[in-house]
Length: 333
Ligand code: NAX
Image (cartoon, rainbow, N blue to C red; front, top):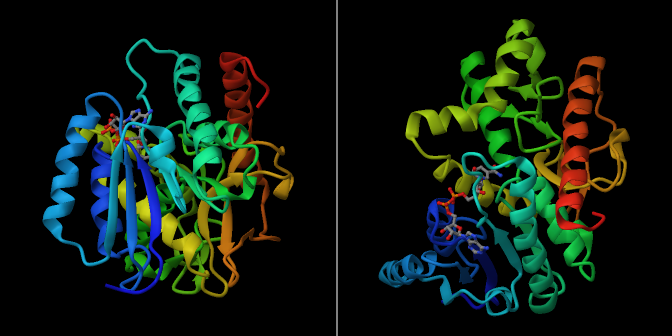
């Protein structure tokens, strides 16, 4: 067994589809590396707790060399105790006839309780990634509920959108995914997100120089990325799970390891007004992780009139979500 202290990762919704696809790879060392021990705190509710008992048996049956400890619980304080990372996946899905406000109200209460428990029980240096939808606003709610923790340690996931966008651009250009870099996802993880092809590169050249069909970029690429989640649901009969888990793990790794020079990755963070965005919403930005482990928003990227308009649409939606959630929860977010 490696001698480093384990990184303790708390996962809510651990027995759900995304949780199940994420935790075995976490335990295998795929995220933090082959010499970094990992401990898992798995959190579930209701019937999920029964399924979780089986998941724990399967973790035992993998005999992972790097997995030092597994806690399985329905108690938030026990679940978040001493966590270095909290991966908040569990959320109530929108059901037929449910208004967006109802969903924000139901999930808002969950994320208030989780934010408070994280502040009480996790390490003060804990980092939190929210996956459960609507993930930007759920993240804002958790961040506000954990007011004693640094807001810069709260993130919402837009990495699945980045990966989807990279794959679409690579297919159109006829190159491997790895040739596509620097695809920012501005704004909300929703159908208003703006996958920014204007600053992306393919094989080191501007994506707009490699893909000369700009009508395709504007009129096909953007909506395909925005609506990819719905297309997966239609084909699979269930929402993206393995790709969402993969993106969550990509995000953890990107925030753990310094970003290569000249590159960035997509994640949503609390806006302080960068690029003219309203402060106080969790907004998808291009982000770099620095050598000291802190992160920064990439500054000075050109934002043309087309991009500005798209960014404005997703900003407006996030401001509306914040207002709706504030009203549903009876508090000012
Ligand atoms: P599942 O329904 O398969 O699993 C969710 C699990 O969470 C269940 O086992 C449930 O018991 C548990 N749970 C519910 N409330 C909980 C709580 N308060 N505490 C602890 N556990 C709780 O859903 P799954 O497919 O795993 O999706 C989970 C969430 O990810 C959904 O909100 C979904 O909308 C969201 N997604 C987010 C994506 C993103 O890019 N940000 C993409 C994929 C996905 O749609």
